[in-house]
Length: 282
Length: 282
Image 1 (cartoon, rainbow over the protein chains, first blue to last red):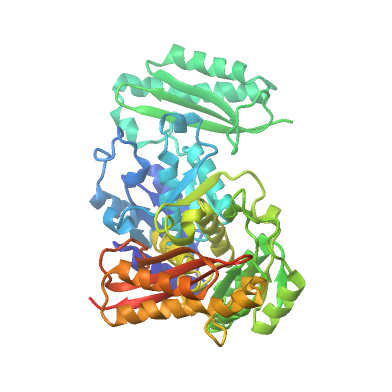
Image 2: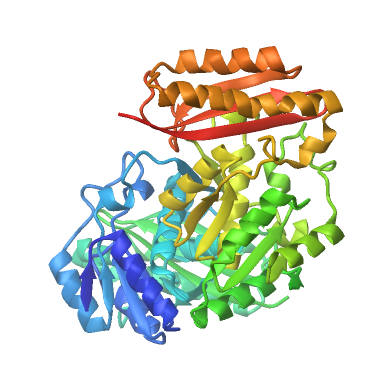
């Protein structure tokens, strides 16, 4: 595996592979790699070449968010990426990605005012801007995102579709602990007791899923059930429980077709999210 | 030459050529092709494949501008494009380029509040949005623009640089009539008398150029000279005469390095523009 620091260099490498008709799979990350990322890299091995990037993108952090404090461990990430099968790891400096005051700005106006986007205004504008740049540098045939960040998947889907990127979006199933808890770098911040009842996020989603599979059409009934389960089994405070169409992420009166059931719960030192995408009848 | 109507189809064609390591030259136009466009197409023949597009992009017209009235002559354009050496002419419908309400918007905040951009707020936002889509569809190695629209060249340069498009921008010299008047579809709208004195736009630019070459450093002296020449030789009304750094398009106190000297003159039924890019000393 080669570590590439310069935008120009990764673009030249990608261009050469395109000329050789090699397919490129791309896994953009902010580093601090965990098993979720590894599963994306492994999925990307269906291509001839796998490029991953590690870039903590300042543009997608709000003024009161933890850009500076975001966890970084480059040495460990390089070892993990290599082991997982990355061919080129792109690790640019901020000054190389944003060398001057921005002249062009991008904004996503749909699929963002719900779920986690509601409390992070501008976050997804930063995400689509950096992804546009990275897609142009890496020129992937396919790019890989985790279903755990379902809203991000929906936003990337909008970006690719709307601007006609020649890139296929592949969304990869959430990796879970044995008891069902979705893997996350933040899980280590849970106390022992919190860790024990964090599994109830997933349990609650399964309860909700069961209702829908059994024919429940009313989102509020499903939401109540999920909230009730979490409140009775966990010390965390519910940030949201939502049922939306997917990937359009619209509020719905009636559950039909593809929907997302998503939760966010704030524990003392960690905010956990999880979701299920459900194919409902109708 | 093949005429392609569907975005998906031109993207598939371009992707196939990329896989065969064929270089693609791209000439985006709004149609009504004249010798300026033909010179772009001929320049693009340095690539293996030449793709041109004809699309009157509604997004770059203001509410009071002439989107509906913009001249269109598809049959003639197809004949001209074929004769000039286009391999694939992409002529999409508006509904194929913009199938639904936009979810992503792009804005260019630099290089636009000067020259023609000053009187066309939002115009270049529409330009960069459609070019982003077209670049993703056509996947060109090189794209060709005329120096006559110098601000557009500067904006495309900003777009490509800032978002790291893997595309080389080639700007092609302005095609002129024998007497020096820059070729434009609008020239036919001039009266015989106006046509006779329209040559003085170019003459005035040459006067200004001579001053700079002879060491004049003060933009206002150059601007006065150019205005004076146009006012005394032409019935048209001056919209602007500007001297700016190029391609940054900043107002300057002192003429040095690369600058643009640009004019816009309103005749009765046609607004003409012209410019010279000058390499000044210092």
